[in-house]
Structures are given as structure tokens and as C-alpha cells.
Image (tube, rainbow, N blue to C red; front, side):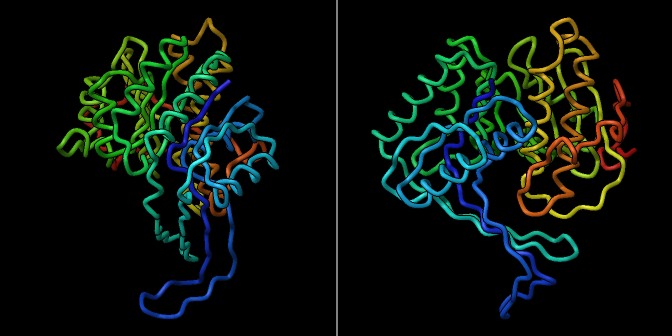
Length: 328
């Protein structure tokens, strides 16, 4: 089982428009309303592909309750902590040419008692012995990266592994604490963490390996249309998908992470720590992420959408290759 924590969940409203003009009246041609937040998106993708998952998140009585009900209707197990302030609502504008504009609310501040209740809920879920706890997305006001570090320590005490998909100061705190078994930054987020450009494969690999917290830790660096790099102590591996026509990039990174984890919990123990296991993980990650960008709004891919055969991998790619030159 894979447990996800979304500390700052959202109701995502996606409006599709022919074009968007600032300062003008714009009319949408369609809309989608989805329960969201990065961890919730990971659980949605896992569940759609028959991977056992539980979504943990704080929820108020209105917006949060709607998110809980929407996930329950999908058949996804949820564990929530009731909070007083309203869960955020995010707006995404998607133009016909694929241009995406996001307007994200900050989210509610959690009181000290609400934070404690959330931690207690997570501890209770960890008693069920999941294989992974995934913390994904931004943190609400009042919480910082130390919250994720504390969770990492708690997860390891329960014998589970800890995956992190966040950015900014939270990513920096977690990365330097060395508690993550898996991190999934995109290229820009990794450069921000490094404090310098990482233009080549060698730059990415060298820095990512310096951030690995234990011998089995891994970092998946998503590169958009240039695929993704998997970096661990065994080296690096690149994967890219045949060219696709994007519909919406919103949530694609969450599906990438879900794909990686789905492969990790389903491959055999015999190949888990071998090159074959790494190929399975990164290929599945890229296949799921590429499938997601071809779907509208924050729709997550199902088995019928995913084409692993369209993914190409390169073991130990040339370290001098520029990231922007990686392609199938």
C-alpha cells in the first residue's frame, strides 16, 4: 500500500479557453472540477491503475468535505483531519495552444492542535505497514520543511519508505536532512536547490548524487519534453517517450511519481536493486507522465492510456550531453 499526504489540498477548477487576453472578458469552452493537491493526484493515479492507496489530508467542512466525497465516489480511501479554515481553491486556464496559466490560493493556516491531529492520523495510518508514505506539494502557512523531516523520521520508525515531491525551502530542508528515500524535483527545482545552473547530464547527476541520503535512495528529475533522469548510487538512467500532443501539463509530474512508485511496489524482489528494476521504475514513470499530458485538466491516466512500449531508456547517458538535447 502507498499512503499519500497532501498537507495543502485543493479543489482545482480548470477552464479551457480558445485564447486568453489579460484585462478582457474571457469565456471558457469547458470546465473541469477535480479534487487535487499533489499527493491526492498521486493517489488518484495509483487507484486508477489498481494500486492500493490511502489519501491523507486536512479538510474543512465545505471545500474539504467536497474533496473527501469526490475521492470516496472514485473508490479512494481517505483519512482526514477536520480544520476550521477553508481548503484552498485553485484555478487553471488552459488555452487551445496548450498555454497554461495557474492561479493558486495560499491555503489555510493549521493551528497547533490541527497540526497535532494530522500527525496523529498519519501515525495511525502507518500502523497498517504501508510500503511508502508520499508527501507532495506545498505546505500551508504555519508549517515548514521541518514538518516533512519529522514525518520522514516517523516513517522510517515504522519501517516504511519516504518519498518527497515539493520545492523551494521545503525541498532544501528535506534534501539536506537526508531523510528522503525518493525525491522528484523537476529540472528547475533541482537548479534552485543547487543554487546554480545544471545544464548537462553530468551536472545533474553529480549534484543529485550529493543529495542522496542513504545507499538505496533515488532522485527522479523530470525534464518535461526531454523525459526524465533517474539518479541513484548505481549511476544514472534517462528515459524519454515518443513525441505526444499535449492537452494539459497540470498534474503530469504527479502521475510521473505515481508511475515510479507503482513499478517499485510491483516488480519482483529479485530485480528491485538491479538495473532491470531501475529500468522498470523510470520507464513506468515516464509512460504515466506522458499519458497524463495528453489528457484534459488534471485527469489521471488509466491502463488504456499508458504506453510503456513508447518509452526509450539509456543507461549511463553521456555526462556531457546538454539537458535540452535529450530526446528520443
